[in-house]
Image (cartoon, rainbow, N blue to C red; front, side, top):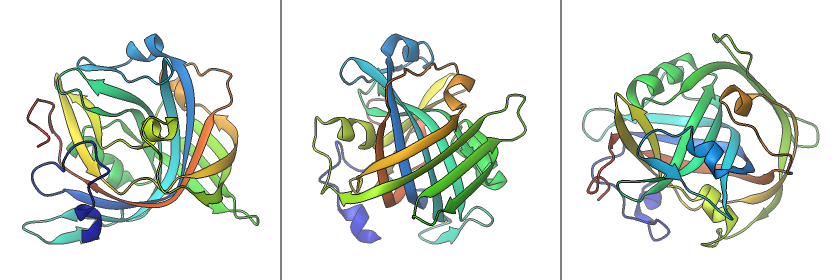
Amino acid sequence: MANILETTDHRPYPLPAGRWRMAQRWSDLLFVHWPVAAEEIARLLPAGLTVDSFDGYAWVGVVPFWMDQVRTRAIGESCIAVPSASEFCELNLRTYVRSSVTGLRGVFFFSLDAASALAVAGARAIFHLPYFLARMQRRIGQDGAIEYDSQRLLTRRNVRFRARYRGLGTVAASSSAGSLEHFLTERYCLFTAHAGRLLVGHIHHLPWPLEAAEAEIELNELPAAHGIALSNRVPVLHFARELHVYIWSLREDQAAAFV
């Protein structure tokens, strides 16, 4: 995948210094987004982050997908597959933010559910992200639609998600700057808070191969579990069949951290 790392013209800033830490492939990914009053999301963010808005709203996304080809960089240049965490389903609840320090625009996760205990433990320890273990199933229906079911485990609150979705087959070359699609998907870093510090993790991938999508969201308890009330508006849907992603280690969010 060296050509992916060499393709950077679409990025808003250069690749971060140093070697990437992990590589993954994300597949059958659905973006489900709702506009939410910016002040409602602002109160849930850690210090150092502000809401990144579009059309005057914050945007909250629920994103089911599955990943495989999970690899981590060992000593030197070699990479190894992650045992018992090389393929699993994941489901995240997210919003979009700006750093008050660097101005970088990225993703903030309220939660990430995963069907791998090793992935949950590793992501909590290494990336300080709010991962939760979940029982998850992904099936392909006779019409090719993805039937996705998740239930969080080991928590007092029952947090479930159930949906049926598919892409509609037409892939745009790339979303254009200034569009809602570009705002929601073309993000090249994530933020998390740990021990009183704001941390940033940089990622790299090619532009999202977005398709129009259709979805039936039967059950969605994630937003309410994290203090978010969704509007009654019909959500914005996008689908991507496959994306290869590289992830760098966390570093403190500061002016010179990403070059």
